[in-house]
Length: 137
Image (cartoon, rainbow, N blue to C red; front, top):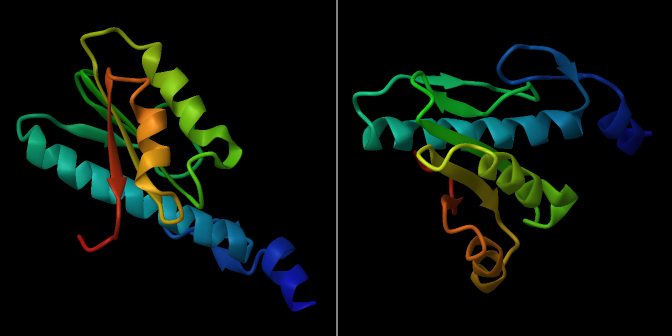
């Protein structure tokens, strides 16, 4: 019963907007939001004269985009970069953008070895990949 409650019953909350979620979704969203916060902090430091729009949660559009649309980032947290094809889908989405757009993927993947990630990232030299190893911001 406990595991069914954790998986199916909405006794958790979205950490940003308070929408009811099951506990598993709450954990997943919390870690994704942490990646977005990490990424926007880094992008603000790298591009101090730009303003950024941030999309938390599962919304259409990019997770982070500069107001002038010249910098775009997708962000996620997964157990493995191969989980649900998330890395592949985000790279395809970013590669559709014009060449002059700065493209980033920020991700947290605790269980992957660096060699596995490098094999994926080397195929997309137009995207800057940032692996977050911890959330000490």
